[in-house]
Amino acid sequence: MGEAQKGLLSVIEKLKGSTEQEVRIVLLGLDNAGKTTLLKSLASEDVSTITPTQGFNIKSVASNGMKLNVWDIGGQRKIRPFWKKYLENTDLLIYVIDSADKKRFEETGLELSELIDEENLKGVPVLIFANKQDLATSSPASEVAEGLNLHTYRDREWQIQACSAVSGEGVQDGMNWICNNIVNKKK
Ligand SMILES: Nc1nc2c(ncn2[C@@H]2O[C@H](COP(=O)(O)OP(=O)(O)OP(=O)(O)O)[C@@H](O)[C@H]2O)c(=O)[nH]1
Ligand SMILES: [Mg+2]
Image (cartoon, rainbow, N blue to C red; front, side, top):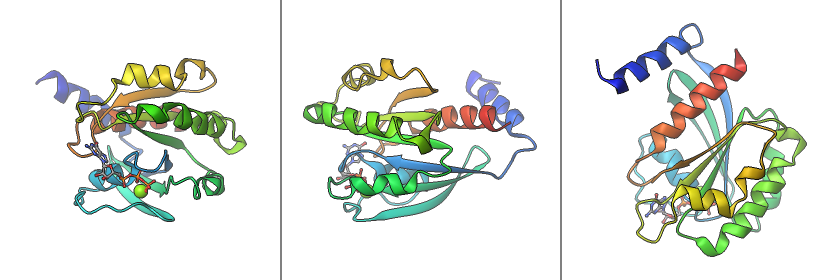
């Protein structure tokens, strides 16, 4: 048995008895970050015809034996004030970054730090996807982490994961982290 299969088996072992655990996830990030693309790729849907989200999408995705109810909310500036209305009872925040959009690292970092301070997200684990790694102009996850001052987040579990929502690379690694954290936290 290869290492990957052993890893998968241990995840399955952990999940025994907790299958169909429901998890509420909010998926946030600036406009054009790739949130909807990521969600569609998780649901194995076509990602070639995605338009900016004007309100929100909700999708239930089965992953690692869990039922993830994901709220994908539009990231345009005029929609951002509504993010706060969706945060109650959130088990996990996924925050998506366009790693090729360096000039907006500061802006996205500020939005994230405001979310982190929200009462409804107190202690909630955060997975940051450093998306669009397939683009030659993208910054590596370590630079995105630096740009966002992630090292200052000491009051919760967080993880940054490099990925490409278009190719799918890195997405499963992020989902495995979610699985481990939610399972550990909810048990
Ligand atoms: N090259 C590349 N393009 C991507 C990737 N993910 C998303 N995109 C593109 O980025 C654009 C925006 O993607 P969306 O998924 O609509 O972004 P969003 O975060 O949902 O944007 P809003 O709904 O406006 O908040 C689209 O043209 C996608 O095809 C990626 O990993 N690599
Ligand atoms: Mg969208």
